[in-house]
Image (cartoon, rainbow, N blue to C red; front, top):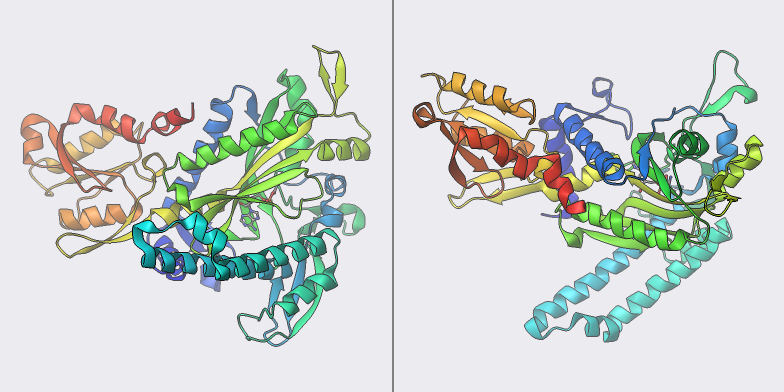
Length: 513
Ligand code: GAP
């Protein structure tokens, strides 16, 4: 399926089956704001649980907190967000549309990467088994020319962003002849900086003193609680603090469904380490986090690392884990070595020490921090992107199936009486009673079994149990696997164990050790 169509199909599918609705839709919606529906909230909660358990339950030195969205306004002065949390924006004078200058340049580079991929695909077809991709990439003149172009754009962009040279950024857009996708024109305004924080007033008094911000990241709630947690939890370095919560950014270009929203959720973990040890911990967390993503089984080729060319004001190393979304490879998670920047800034602005006393050396120091930060909504979109499949079956019929990892599926199983009589519905309800405390289940008795299977496929239910007349005689049912569509007969007593093996938290988490 064309990747562009995939996003459209996903949006329609999410709405039709109750995963995601446009927010306040009866008033024609609010730009880039979405509500999670009855199935969406289940999947989202399961993603949170997967993250939370793997962070806190599988790491004895990581604990969680839930800090307030509103924070003392000085927090954001200290963190640098008031002065430096900006995006460079540029307007097209003809379409009056606003863009992020850096995103226009990244999209340009992505197009160049696609050109290289096309050359590779063509050559692969031509040479078949004899094709040596590495050699082709290193020697083909067309590929080399495009690679050189990408390199040049990256270097100029990095320089302009680092120097905050907005005119250079604009010049690069002009030199590359980048056009507005709406008007097709190159009639661009100057590039300006735009602060992304939402502000509001505290209490009834308006004015500078009462201005507070909606947090643009959850991380600062962790930093300001560093000593509270360390002391009350008697934590020893290295240790981590994890948090899941809403974040808000007044994004200039908020679109592409739930990929870029103004209100979204983050799952962040700050790992406090001894200064000097941060880069080896950075590598450690890169490896842990990619393993965590791959454990979902969405396909190794859907992920890649991308090193930041412009380091944020607080980082000495940073990369993204990118996912192959319908719009191409884009950031899913950020991993940052944030140095001691945040804690030192809070020490300075609050006038309080935020240091760790190491009893083994009798030394006090401000720890360095490795951060892992994944967007929950983007994670949701990554799962749906890989899970959504349209299949033509052997009999020529079609099905749309969500191959969501079994432990994350909104419903783990559907229980379907073959007919609505002869005591089969009662038997089906008794099975639900037996399983509902451990597994989310759905009962469905309407329409033919085939139609009921299709409905469960469309919402990603990994198993469907059919209760038939034989079930009354020998306490067995058929269990159908969503992905293989294979059905097997099984004793009802064996169901809890079977489901535990295939869709419990321990089944998903056991590979992470
Ligand atoms: N504390 C570090 C931090 O916030 P970030 O790279 O700006 O780093 C982390 O954000 C993650 O949050 C991103 O990788 C992305 O998944 C998610 N995210 C950021 N902005 C978002 C937005 N506007 N909509 C949805 N998710 C977003």
